[in-house]
Length: 468
Image (tube, rainbow, N blue to C red; front, side, top):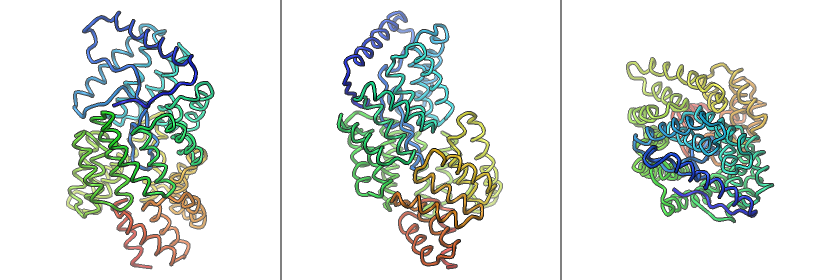
């Protein structure tokens, strides 16, 4: 895997990087050969990373290098974390070790889905910058971590500050675009991405451009960019987790635009690249559920949960248990529902990462409507993106405020995004306000576009249509 190309416009930045490399080389010499095999590479790649599903695609961060999908990668990453964090604790002026510690925490978060790894990464980069303020690598990485922690305003501000000093910092431009898109500033995101691309395209930037195209309803460009990202990643030497991520993103775009068979092929290809890809497993589960094979979908989701116990995976499996309704399934569903909230609580300081997913889960099932609404509205205060308006609208409907939900849903639809879940929510809200024609149109469009968006809710859409 290669990093995003950097184009510095000020000689001082190149000098700072050179000084850092010299210091790292000196550290390596002091360590001596063989004392720490497979130490991670110094230069952090700043391409697409955590690869969360389309509801949170901006979690695109840096790391220490490609993993291969081999379980030994996890052993290596944890060993590297122990090594570099220990070195930093022994010498709090060793910003090089702090940087390496942070980069490996990012790699751990990407490999395991453990959001608390990003908290530790943030702490490591804070310490590094505190020791050596003119530390562009740590600043860029920290901004990416802030995106992963859904601290989008902080990420935007940090990237913007860095760009004042170094306008040609492609990593900062990409992160700025990510943060602005999540904050609902589509025009600002486009400007940032265009500037980054002008410095040299890459698979990472193609993924970003494809997602932006999807958000504004340009599905043709979204598909073209997603396919191009896979090809570019292969040319860049992406392998393992990274190669799987680009294929997962292609599959996600395909299934969201109605090509379920193509998506299945892309997800399967992703799984071949990285047998531990929880994203590919969840994608294949989505396909299986839409095809009516609930048992296979449950099995695939169980495999994904074994790798990364994401609350959204547990919520989806709970719904599948309810739909299948075999002996013991209701108990299994109840267990998964309890797990959803437990995982969010375990995230501690990073629990806000799950606020939107938790709000949707509660609203989907008519649970704690006041809490669902509070979670959605609190997040919308800063994060005014298409899915933020959608989540707030859905929570308003669950709270019995159909007229307010309808007005909020109009704001979500104004982005132009062609997403089956949005259309489903719009249809159910229209039905609640008594607009039968609009409800029928939206629900039919949702099921025609992508009935895989949610097996449980798709069945509810069919039942609602039958009663209209």
